[in-house]
Image 1 (cartoon, one colour):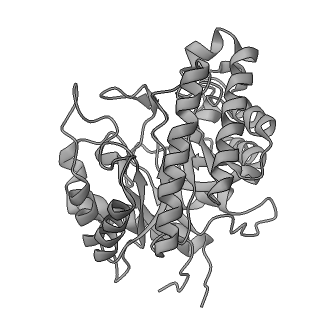
Image 2: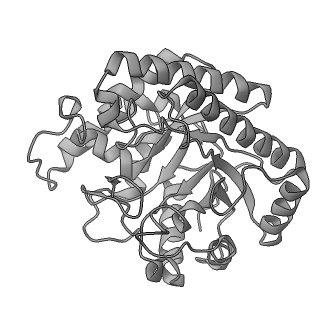
Length: 343
């Protein structure tokens, strides 16, 4: 058995929420997600923690006593807490002055919760995740002007986050304007230019960056790409990760079949496949190394935990124990190949 104990292995709680609700299936309760996570076990290895969404499951306006109760609940399952998703969608980052102020306020509230969880001792690592809360179509109406607004909002959010000792990670996903291609994402990060601004790579989403979804001119893979051509895919992933890895401070292990999908109110984005989906285009454990190691093959150790992200699966799949064991087994393989040991 491989003895690597880092990075820690986390499960995301938001797949119980994202794509659920009206127009889709019911939300899977927070307690159910915790129970499924804690119950998963492969050869004696279990999940180390969870990453949380501060919406639906949890109240962004929770009191400090509520934060303590949350810590006690998660800790009761012998799990830690890692990264948090800020509920910023009510105020687009390229919106009106009032909307952008609301965005920053949601970041502030999220950072307060993060700081308290860290002080309690249940959150040894993690960031606060954000996106532009704006569509690529809306962004396309005025790329320069809208990018300027997004950058300004992110800078203000970073300055607030710094007061709480928090880092912000921008989610690389094709459904967020100004972040919908690898080049627009890189331009946004460089323009924000704050020491506590970084990138969150999700393997299911970043694969679509190579395909030029929502921004054809930034495609890396050739049109009508033959997925059996592994060398060309490897080269595309190397191009992508060389640009964005230096910014990466949060990482999601995931699988994708090269298509887009949306459900409920969520726009179409990279389809999260089950860990062992035969249609998956990624060699998950191998390809995670492009993010976890630099060009010389050295581990970056840029983050202390990695998280599985699998959104918009049917509830029947989500509540099946084997689903979580398969996910955990895949995460273990990533750590075996690209992990390290700390006493």
